[in-house]
Length: 250
Ligand code: URA
Image (cartoon, rainbow, N blue to C red; front, side, top):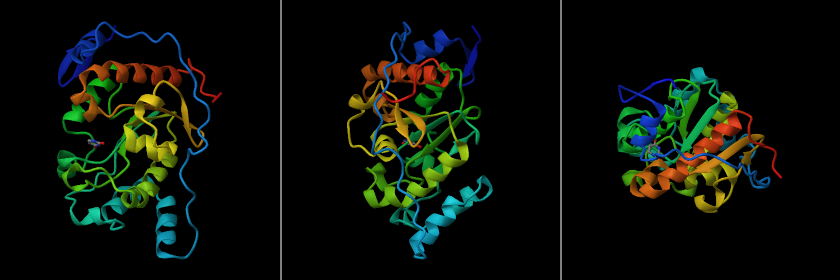
């Protein structure tokens, strides 16, 4: 079994899982498939000549070259007044896996990179256990590109203003699979307010892309027993990427 680097330490997959508190390893026996989610997919971009329509059209035409600068200049919601840095996303622009979280926290706001705090360390450890890292095969983004003060829940107007950026990222990356980390991501990608517990273990769709829903790493830090379920979800996602599980909605 190949060894991996976790926080600078060479570790086998078993070591990584032990660090996650997930030994003995959970084994996927059955891969259920979700029905199509009729509410899935983002709303269409407005083509009116209004300011918002023009903004959405501009974002819909962005390339990677202009993407981060456009986000950095964004003043479409009130979070621009309190952010330190925008956090557009990080990773492989041709990634197979797209992980979508909620919004930057304090450390992400300071550094301009997603998931670099405690929750990010857990996400990195889970990626390592899958043989992945944030620089290769993986892209990490958030529903919001700016930090809500005090890490409060994103407001609907903020989510709506930021939505075109995630939509464009998905179009540019064309990942093989999206992992929705927590409720904000699941709600935006699937158009549902259902609980994470009820959405886990099935393949959903965002447009034509498969989506797997799991718990947010920050939640897992507070709720250790659910770590094993999140690992189960990621192993399930890996079977989809590997083409071992059906992804056609029933
Ligand atoms: N939580 C998130 O949802 N995203 C981050 O980037 C950091 C913490």
